[in-house]
Length: 497
Ligand SMILES: Cc1cc2nc3c(=O)[nH]c(=O)nc-3n(C[C@H](O)[C@H](O)[C@H](O)COP(=O)(O)OP(=O)(O)OC[C@H]3O[C@@H](n4cnc5c(N)ncnc54)[C@H](O)[C@@H]3O)c2cc1C
Image 1 (cartoon, rainbow, N blue to C red):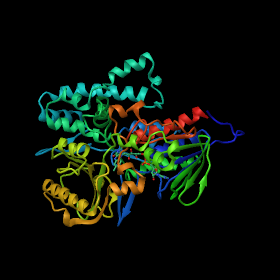
Image 2: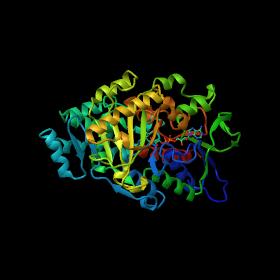
Image 3: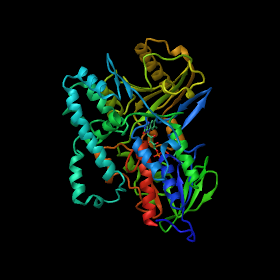
């Protein structure tokens, strides 16, 4: 629907300028809606932001740029190119994988990759081709037929072709069983199972459908926006302003005034109030339900959220080093401990992982603009932990000491003495900065019964003019889904208005 100029513009307020909110704002503004984003923090971008300290620029959250087609399609929808907003470099290797006593480069070169798989498990490269073909089919079917659906009703899937596609997606099998039916080697299984962490779940509770992530990883590649991941939110923010969206920052929404099942007024902690015809919340769904709505207007109560599989939280360290670190790459996965023990600790026992796996990003291997001096190194270390873990200075220090010792032993280099900048981010910060439920990092896990129609609905069931976007609703956690989620919410408003 394109509103003609004589018609009064419909007003939309988007609470939360995360990537999903920014995406929604662009689609609506382009169709001539009067759009305002209100965010509690000092910049838009939500989890996709950065901070600077003593000449280092650290990405605060996301560091992996996968599925570039999703971002390209977003910009194309506005007759733009991604390169109009930021420049991408494809990383080679995509990442380094540290297993117990060996390390592997996940190369973009097909032959090198096949040789690597053969060296781990003879015969596996042929099976990998078949595995990837199936993963490609899942990726294409999902992107072409499923991912854009609002999932408000199961009826969206009632067509012969949908049912046919459904059976190619392996939705009822677990990712772990699917991978095990192709490969025996623990190392290959760990390599292929790791993306389940991005989806907030475990390889056992994530449907095999999500082997599409292996296609996105190995075939689609790992990319880097020059200047850091923050360039993506800068790009989205710039486009949204070009389309006329207003950004109100440092403004935390604190309540709604509701009349006859419509939000009549949005109130902020600063004492301001706003009116709109439609509201999209990219702020987290549980927060909106439990903190902004009164009890009688909640669709999902506290007991509903407490029974969901919430994605893990994370303990993150940002380190500026006075020297370069040898033998690491831009992205490094430390799977030198048992994956299942880590998963069991954080998902089943809800305790701090005794022997954590961790991920280390070193953007200064690619980009010198993130360090004050080319002889220095910019390091980001992330340990997945249980949501709502007890967070304290002591526990953070203990884990930093542990992972640094392991990095030192792999790189054969002293790192602890080279730290000139040190910051960390954990459960308490997720709660404070994002109003994140239980201090989660990635929202709601993509398990079978939390996928598609089983996710919290993106259109509120009780409040007529309230919609949601982001990682607690469809399609799920991650930056590409956030972009798509904003588009779905915007299109739903266009349909309803
Ligand atoms: C540590 C970490 C690493 C990650 N790594 C990757 C990665 O490498 N690749 C990838 O694809 N994805 C990654 N993700 C996931 C990705 O960042 C998220 O899925 C995505 O950014 C979510 O976007 P969103 O719009 O749903 O929410 P958010 O980005 O959380 O945005 C919500 C916004 O709402 C605002 N808000 C909250 N409450 C209020 C209020 N009351 N009033 C006003 N504003 C409010 C917040 O300030 C925030 O800006 C990572 C996430 C984390 C935390």
